[in-house]
Amino acid sequence: MGAKAKQIGQCTVDFEKNGKQIGFFNLPLSVHDDAWGVVRVPLAQIKNGEGPTVILEGGNHGDEYEGPIALGEMIRDLDPGLVSGRLIFIPAINLPAVVAARRTSPIDDLNMNRTFPGDPRGTTTQQISAFVNDVLFPIGDAFLDLHSGGSSLDIIPSSVIEPVDDPVQHAKNIAAVTAFDAPMIVVIDNRGDPRTATASAARAGLTVVGTEMAGGGTVSLDAVRICRRGVSNVLAHLGALPASLASPQENEPLLYEIPGDGHVIAGDDGVFEPFHRNGETVRAGQPAGRIHFLADPGRAPVELHYAVDGIVYARRQPGRVRPGNCCLVVASPYRSSLS
Ligand code: CA
Image 1 (cartoon, rainbow, N blue to C red):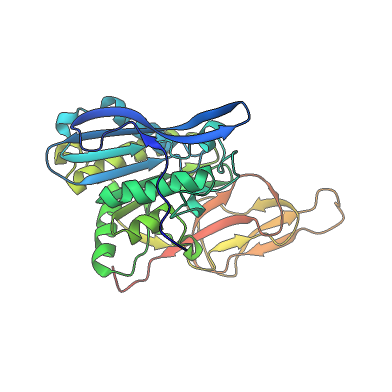
Image 2 (image 1 turned 60 degrees about the vertical axis):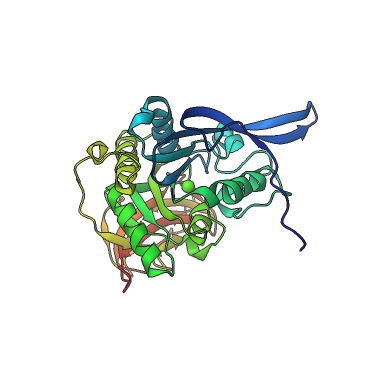
């Protein structure tokens, strides 16, 4: 309805200026004890010479740490003379969630990755999404969205393909995601949800790379290393860093996907006991685990089953489950005519 709302907030970084700038996107937040305060979202840019504009995001979920750590290092350490083009870093984009170490923002309780394309007239999280969508995506050529499993999941470190309809864009995404060189490459459509950052970036025509780096609300030694070298590998692949900064390939570029029935969902209130570790091969119909009823020891546990063949890609971290909770995720070999 009506004209698009005007973008609000103020960015201290000049996107046209060469060199390294470390600043903020300041979004007004008027609360009881701070009438004219702001949310200071960190934003940095390294610009030099000719080349692509790459937007690097971490902290979309505030309890996922490998991406923000890798991006912070790059902001501090990268010599601008090595860059061809423009790198725009938003390593703690949902700042209130990052400060709270939560998936969702404590200000409006929203999951930023279900708020795109955002709304300048909305709540704080929706306003941050609108800044990314309306200000950053239009000047970007490529987008890296660095996620981990968060507090509720432990996921095999992987680079992630956002599926798109255009075969040319899809091929570019596969090439960039493969260049990351994670132990797995997985096509994830987030159950078809159009409100994610990567879905929105893909609609804007950008080349899109996602990740899932372990999780459990902690920092994984292995995943930090994978993420660090993966970001440099993708930037070298895109031509924004010299090829000499890419690492030799370590992993077989095998593509997986999460089928529609790849999620094992709890149907009871209890404690979930898994039967397999991440990475184990499983078959459709095989028992996946069982839900125990600790307050009713005479009651037999309820068994859950896999619905597809594949490998265990992710596992719920808290033992306690309620009906609807995702206990396990199976990834299957990718079947697409596009690849
Ligand atoms: Ca995430």
